Amino acid sequence: MTEYEISGPSRVCAATGRELQPGDRFYGVLVEEGGKFTRKDYAANAWTGPPSGHIAYWAGRVPAADKPRKPVVNDDLLLDCFDRLKDSADPEGLNFRYVAALLLMRRKRFRFEDVFRDATGRDVMLLRDARNGAVHQVTDPRLTDDQIATVQTEVFRVLGWE
Image 1 (cartoon, rainbow, N blue to C red):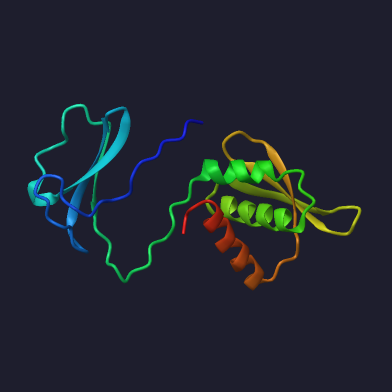
Image 2 (spheres, rainbow, N blue to C red):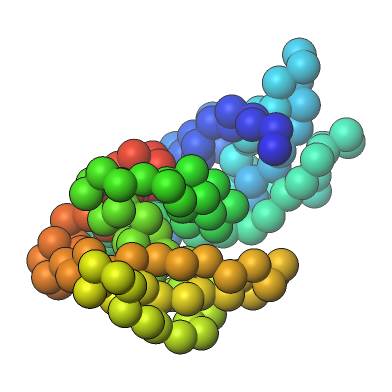
């Protein structure tokens, strides 16, 4: 997978230089400039259509400053981290992988198939990848709800989604 670094919203209209305020409608455009992808935002009243050579464009609204945003979850990145921890015996790795599996189930990427008890007495979930049918075994580390929330926060921090 190729990685691209694209700047976040500028909150400044590229056409007028006016700062976009919470609640303002805007158009975002992805263009290539000097061999790099650049995002430009336009106030709705300054929008005349996408510039020639644009890669993509979309409409949105500037969120309220006091309203917390939900993190954007990249399923493929989360799945990559999940896969890398497949053979981890480290408790932190097991916790991270378990919470990643729960997030992937919530995102409907994984489907619960079954559960069984392994030789050590721990519960192991069988999860099927909805895209390719692969079956994954995930050991339940028996985390409390608070521990799951803590690990989820760590997953988001590690992946840059906070």
